[in-house]
Every structure is written in C-alpha cells, then in structure tokens.
Image (cartoon, rainbow, N blue to C red):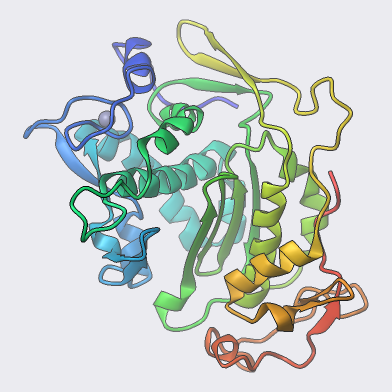
Length: 362
Ligand SMILES: [Zn+2]
C-alpha cells in the first residue's frame, strides 16, 4: 500500500536524520528529528485537540506509569511546525472526519492512516514519559520510560515516518485492525477509552460509536481472525463487551511468538518496506497456547472486577459476548448503564460462565 506523502526536497536524507540519528530531547522534533528553535517549535498533542474537545477531556487527568496524573491537555511532545501542521494535521483531519461519520467510515480509511495515527499516540505517550522522572519527589530518579525502551521502538518510529515521506509497504502495512460499532454512553467523557500494551504494540481505543482494536506491528497476524470478529459487528456492542474484546485482543497480541522481519529498499522516490513471511521456515505455531487463567487476570485488570468472580477453577471465564448458545447477547445501556453498572458490580444476570470466545489459535 502506497502512502500519499509527496517526496521532500531533501529525501532520503530527511529519513536518515529522523531514524538513524534519532535523538531525544526537548529541542528535537519527535518525528523528523529536526532541531527546534523559536521559529519552528510547536507542541504536538499526543491525544489530538479535536479528540480532547469532543470527549470533554481537556481538563481530565490521565494516569501515568509512575502513578501520577497529568491533564490530557498537557500531554504534548516537541514537534516542528511542518510535521505538526502539514503532515500530522492532514492525518488528524481524515481521522476526525471518519470518527464523526462512524465505524463504517473508519473501516474505509486506508489501513496505514489508522495504524500510524494510533502509533503516534502510543509512541507519543512513551516519548512524553521518557521526559518525566519515575519518582517525581526524587531529583535523581530514573525516567518513567528508560531511553532504551524508546530505542527498541525504532522500527515503529521508522513506520511513523510514512506520514511525511513516501513509503510503500509490501505486501501491506504490517499491522492488524478490527473496527466495531459500540453504544455511546452519556456524558461525553464516558465515550472515550484508551488502553495499550506497549510490549506487544497493541492498542484499544473507544471513540463514541467507534471501537478500534489494533496490533501496530504484528505483521498482520490478527487480521487472520477477521471472520471470527465478524459476529461482533452484527450489533452495537455495550462498552463492557468491547472491553472484553479488548482483553482478548491484547492478551492474544502477547501470545504472538514471531516478530515480523523487514527488508527496506531505497527506490529513489520512495522507501519500499518488504515484510518477510511471518511463519518463516519454522513450523511452530505463530501464537502460544491460550491460558484461561492468565486471560481472566487480564480481563479482571481491564474491567476492575474481581478475578475470583471472573474465573472458576474448572477453567471457565465469565463472558458477556456469548449467551451460552454461541450467540452474542444484546446489552442495553438503559438497563446496564455505563460505567455505573460495572462499578457497582451489578452486571446483567444473563452473563454466563463459559470458556471465553477466544480468537482461534493461529
Ligand atoms: Zn518534524
């Protein structure tokens, strides 16, 4: 799939500056690596301004890995005005428009748009946390995200460059996306949710009626489960049902045994990224076996419900995605208000204890 970015005058030097000389700091653009001064410096909002306004998050607090909170509006990273206003600004306009139109419009977006947009959020959060101290009260404490962790994301950072330099992905962008229609609770701040697993590079985001699960760099492994996910697209999911899918997707991402490998080729007017076959020469499964107990712990973490309530030693896990006959039950926000019904641990009695509707083994 081909990016639409025009060829910059200084291509490919601009790519090498961004990626090979990757430097971190408040005087460097997080994306292209340009030095920042008073004339070209801007602050890029990790969660874009349109999103913060739409979901009433401007003054809301976001919990960080060090246990402290930061207002969403302060979650900014250094960015040059060209990357911010031209490249990322154009991407934001496309995403904002599609989210306003709903799940079908988001599904119709080019895959790289969605994956790069989510990738910028995940990378941006880690980048910001790279500036912050792990323990704010100790002046010499380590950073929340050690610099080595950011450097290990270098391939991901490389793919983010496709928003500003021409990059062609063969056979396709090496990630997976599943989009669902979700019921939209009131008020607006309950219409937004973001979760990620930075080790597996997997993200879940709920934006009004749009629910997206994305594995940013899995080589398309979870796209192989699209048919399995189709049954959950038949009706608007309750936010709790989307959270259950989130737990399944993020856990499955962790089980992947293969890291995709790439060959990069400079074709003069673009960089061509060839992904090697995911299976390679190995006959071993692409995913480790699914463990119900581990999954139930992840489900408990995401829902805030007790593990003991969700998991039964017989190996069964509570599910809101299966009515006991293999059908997806309809949950109604009026009968089961979100998030009140879950916080009060007063969830619908129709929930059944079953092995979860896990994505099939790879
Ligand atoms: Zn830049």
